[in-house]
Amino acid sequence: MTWPTHDVTNQAPPLQDYNLFTADPALREALARAGGGWAEEQLTRQGAELGTAASYEQGRLANQNTPVLHAFDARGFRRDQIEFHPAWHALMSDIAWRGLHTGPWAQPQPGGHVARAAGFILQTQIEAGSMCPTTMTYGAIPAMSRDALLARDWLPTLMRPEYDPRDLPLAQKRGGLIGMGMTEKQGGSDLRSNTSRAEPDGAGGYRLTGHKWFFSAPQCDAHLVLAQTAGGLSCFFVPRWAPDGSKNPVLIQRLKDKLGNRSNASSEVEFQGAWGHLLGEEGRGVPTILEMGTYTRLDCVLGTTGLMRQALSQAVHYARHRQAFGAALIDQPLMRNVLADMALEVEAAIALALRLAQAFDSQHDEAQSLLRRLLTPAGKFRICKRGAELAAESMEVLGGNGYVEEDVQARIYREMPVNSIWEGSGNVMCLDVLRALGKNPHTADALMAELAPAQGRNAHFDAHLQRFSAALRDTDAQQSRARALTHDLVLAVQAALLLRHAPEPIAQAFCASRLGGEWGGGFGTLSKATDFDLLLSRALQTA
Image (cartoon, rainbow, N blue to C red; front, side):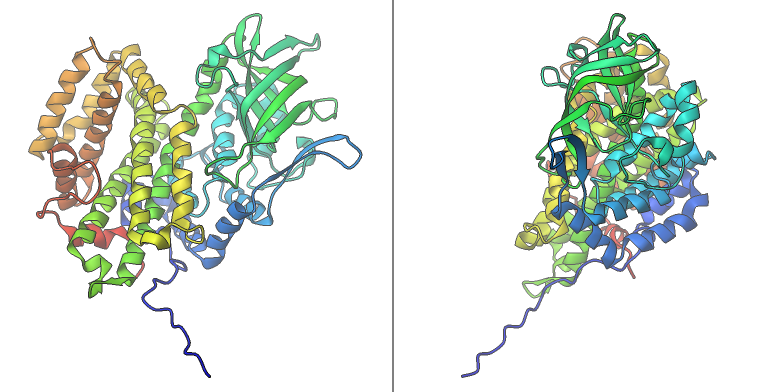
């Protein structure tokens, strides 16, 4: 007897072999207005390279084959080496070649941070774990550049667009990466409670004893580390190899078994007299390492924006190809509302992310510096929170097809929480917003100057701005309401950017849904006046 074959029908093909950059009009427009238009050609090339089936497969393999710690060799000697799948090395090679770990430092020019930000958003869509050592290197370079020894001996190699995974002293390598170690078991975000100690070695260096509970990317060539000294909590540059050519005794205890970010090695370590070089002044460790943290917080915003962008792309692509109840999913009225609402959130995230990167390009402008100090923690709070919600909703568009590890949506969902936790979780960010507002009285002025050009364009925006201005002046219960204040701050900036630069129907829909009381707490509650066709046409332009 011959059994009938089973045909698979009504399944969407994989989203691949398209250009991530040209498919994203919001990113292209934000790049141009923020001063990075000169990079359009290279980003178009990057978008095409990343959108291939082979690129998506690298991301899958790097996460399926997670790092393995080899603490000892066969004879019992310490190795403290991490074994990665070849896909990880291929991803890191491409990142280095594109200059995402050094970009504006290696090739300074107007709009450098903006161009890198766009490239970072594209790269994260394929694989997010490899962006961890990328962003830490990017963030460490400014502090290192002010140290004569590190600027001479380390920066030339770090600036090269090459990835060299060999475990050797930096002088023998073609390229390098920097990591960080701040938190300890007993303190977490309370860095002042750190107990690791550093003692002068009598030869100009220090010897560190203690531990780190999260030591990011232990395979990196050096790490910025916090430790207590006689002068207080200080920042140290701790290389994998000591100046005498010996392996520095930074002993990897285990790799973290994480919810997401699984391609990347995060670890617990112990310092047993590890050699370190004092970076900055004794007792000024937190401000020194938090300069690095400012740049990595920017990348939390960029990384989450990239993940949101890819989650939306996957959902829209699926809805265009999947039939249900007699029509394509994307033609179903309620599904159109959900997808358009997610597209609106992504438009706003991209606008804020590149505006923030633009502020990083204006290093010598006081108003832009104040905005950067304020909007970095605020943007990290709001966008990273919304990212997790959007990832869940986009998975739901695919239903069970999105809830399996074979689909990229599951990995995106597991990846989302890390950017909200890393470099300071939600409460830490909101308290940092209050510090920024309280430290300099001109910060609020810079913010209002940023928002002023959008006034008079939408009644919901004007009313929101009036309420927000009153909340800024009410300092009595500000700390307990810090989340609400930060939430309203980011919505005001996003609305202002869209009112000034986005197609008018998109700006009006954002203000009505986010500021005008139409928002129902989730996605899919836009009013019938929304221009759904416009939002969905901009959501993924692969044709």
